[in-house]
Length: 244
Ligand code: SF4
Ligand code: SF4
Image (cartoon, rainbow, N blue to C red; front, side, top):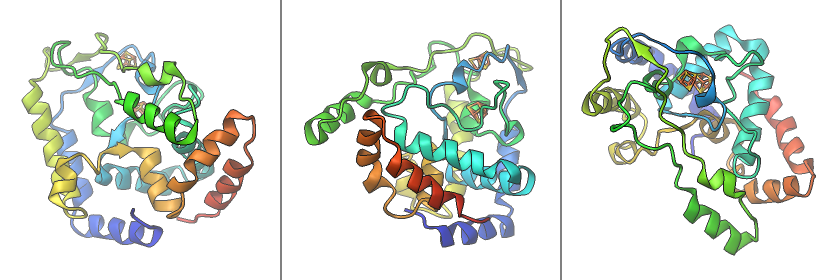
C-alpha cells in the first residue's frame, strides 16, 4: 500500500522524468471520439486507472479543482467502502450535470471505451461471484445480486475520426506503454498482473486513508446496511484533513 508520504515523492519523480508528457503522448495516439454523452459508462462503478494516471488526476485536481477536493474525497471514500453494498456508487468525477469533471485527464479506460468492436469488447463483469460468496461465508454480509451480476455493456454510440474500430492488440499495446510508466514505481510482475490498474477511489484510499482503510471495510459495510454511517463519517472527517 502506497502511503501519503510516498505520494509526494511519486509525483516529484513523475515531474522530473516527464512521465505526464509521456502519458499524454500515448493518449494522443488514440483516435478522437464523440458520443451521445448518456453517461451510462460513468454511472456504475469507477473505471480502472494506471497508477501514473492516478497521479495525473491527483495533480490536475490539486492545480485546477482544489475547491472540489473535499467533494472528491467524500465520493471516493464512499465508493471505496460502499461499492459492494450500495448500487448508487458511481465514478466520483461524474458531476451533477452528468458530465465528466476531469475530461481532459480522464484515464485510458474511459478514452478507449467504444473503440473496440462488439466481438473484441471484453465484458465489464468484475468477477464478484467468488468474492460475494466469501464475504457471505466469513462475515455473514450479503452483496446484492444486482451488484454481483452487473456487466458494463458494449456501447455502439461512439464515433471516431478513424472511422473504424481499433484492433484489440493495438489498444493492448497502448495500455502496455502506460503500464511501462508504472514500472518505475512497482515491480514488472505487479504491473503485468494489472495490480496497478485500479479504480481511482481505490488508489486514493491507498494513499490518503491510511493503512487501516481496508481492514475497516467490512465493519463500515455492515453498519451501512443497518442504516448507520458512524464509522464511515469518522473516516471521512479524518480524510478531509488531508492537505495537498
Ligand atoms: S461512451 Fe456510450 S455509454 Fe458512455 S457516455 Fe458515450 S454514449 Fe453513453
Ligand atoms: S473519469 Fe470521466 S469519463 Fe471516466 S467514468 Fe469518470 S466521469 Fe466518466
